[in-house]
Amino acid sequence: MAGTKRKNTESNPDLECYIGIDVGTQGTKAVLYHPKSQTIKARSSAAYDLDDNDELDNDGNSKNNTKRAEQQPSKWIEALHKTLKELSLIINNEGYIVAGIGVSGQQHGMVALDENYDVIRPAKLWCDVEASSQAERFSQKATEIMAKEWTIPAGFTAPKVLWMKEMEPQNWDKTRWIVLPHDYINLCLRTGIGHDYTEVSNSTTNIFKHNLNNVDKSIVPNTDAGDASGTGILDQNTREYVKELAQIIDEKYFNILPKILSPNEISGYLSNEWKVALNIDRESKIEIPISVGSGDNMMSSLGCKCVFPGNAVLSLGTSGTIFGVSTTPVQTGTPVAAFCDATGKHLPLVCVMSCTGVLNSVLEHWCSTPNSKMTHEEASKLAGKIPPGCNGLSFLPYLGGERTPNWPHATGALLGITAQNINCMSGGQPGLVYRAAMEGITFLLAEALNQMTCSCSEGGFNPKSIFVVGGGSKNKFWRQMLADVLELELLFPLEPESAALGAAFQAGAAATGTSVDIFISQQTVEMEDTIVKPTNDRKTLNLYKDALNKYREFSTKLFK
Image 1 (spheres, rainbow, N blue to C red):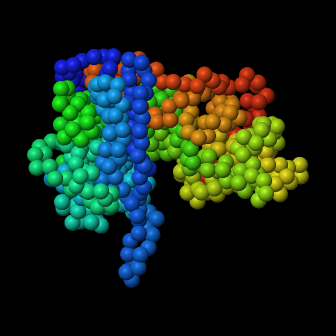
Image 2: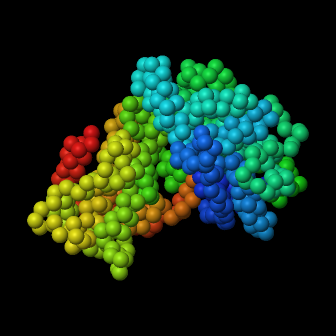
C-alpha cells in the first residue's frame, strides 16, 4: 500500500489537516497540523503514570521492584480518547478535513497480544530492566550467531520477550503477537479496538479486553524499521528481522512479529468505530489513512526537520541525547545505538546520563545556601566571568555513573584544585564550580558526538549543524559554550512536541505518496531567530581544547 492515496469525496486542500500522536511514557500528546499554512492549528495532551511496581516477597510482604517499569496499554487508549476528542472539536468547528494520522510511540516496549488482539499482560517499557540476565545471555548467543559483537541492553524488546517466556510461561503460551507501543495504537485505530473503552470500563489498572466480535483476525500488525531496530533482532542493513536471532528466544518468536513496512507506507485506515467515537467524519465520507508510524526518537528527528545527512539533534534534559541522520549503519561493538530512522536511512543515537540533573545538583548544593537560592541565570552570569578551562579546574560529572561511556560505577570528581581555587570547596566561588560542571557535561557530550562520527563507516555521520532542544537549551551561556566546544552552529526549534509533529509529517507523506524526507523538506519548522555559531576567538577555542584533553585524560585514568 506504499503511497496509496485516500479516497476523498469532498477533497479541499485548503481544509486538509494531519493528526500527529505521540504515545509517551508519561502521557500522550496530539497535534493538528495544517500543511497549507504550515502551522499547528490545535494541540492536546493527557497524562498518566507507570503502574505500581510492588510485588510480594517469599514471606508474602509487599516490596518495591525497582527494576520493573510497566504500563497498562489501556492508559494509552484512554488518552487517545481524551486527546483526539479535544482535537475533533476544533476540526468540526473549523470544518477541517482529516487527511491522515501518524503515530509516534515510546521505543522498546513489549506489548503481548493473544489471537484476539487482547492484551495479555501490562506492557514492559524501555526503562524496565528486569531482563538483565536475559539480555546478557541473549547478547552472548547473538554475538556467536552474527560473528561480531551484538550486545543488546536489558531495555530493548528481545530480552523482555525472553524474560516473559521464562518467568511467565502461561502468558507466553497465549501470545500470538509481540508488538511495540506505536504498533498497538495503529492496530487499535485500524480495527476499532478500544473505541468503546470509556463505555465498558473507567479503570486504567485492569487488563483491557475489547468486546468487538467483528475484528478481522487475519489482520497482521505492522511496524517500521526505525522502531523495529530497537528490538535487538533487526539487521539495520537489510531492515529485516534476523530469524536466527529471534530463534534464540523461541522458534515461534519470528512468526509473531509485526510486518515491517517502508517509511511512507500506509498501515491501514481509521475504522468507522473510531470515527464515530471521536466524532471525526462520522458519516465515513473519506478514508483516513494511518501512516506506518515509528519510535519517538525517529519521529522527533522528523519533527525537527532532521532528515538529511549533516543534521543532528541534541536534547538537553535530565539526561542528554544526541541522534542524527547517517547514510551508513553504525558499526557493532560501540556504545552508539544502531537504529534505523523513519526515512529509509540510519539514526545513530547516544544517551548520556549526566546532563541538566548534574547542573541542578551543583546549583542546589554548591551555589545556594539555606537562606539564598541561586538561579541558573545568576549562576551562569557568575560563570561567564571565569575563563574557559576554569583555571585548571576539571569537573567529571558522573554523579550517578555513566552510560556513554559505559562506566556504571564511575563517580563525580573535582580535579585540579590549587591554592588559588580551593575556596570553591567552601562555596567561595560558585560561578567557578558551576562553570566547571557545565564544561564537564559539555565535554561528555562532545566525546559522545565524536563516538557517533567514528562509529558510522565511510563518513556516514558528519553533522554540520545541530538542532538543540530540551530545558537546558534555554541557557544562553551554555549555548555558546556548546557551539565553541562542538565547533558547530546551533539552531533551536520552537515546537516542544517534535515527536507528535513528526508523526503528522509522516502522515502527510503517506497520504500523498511522497517520500518522507522530501515531504518534510517542503514544510516549515519554526525556529528561533538566533543561530549560535562558534566563536572566532582562537584563544577561547584553544582553552577549550586544552580543557577537553585534560578532561579526557582524567576520566580515562580514573574509570576506564
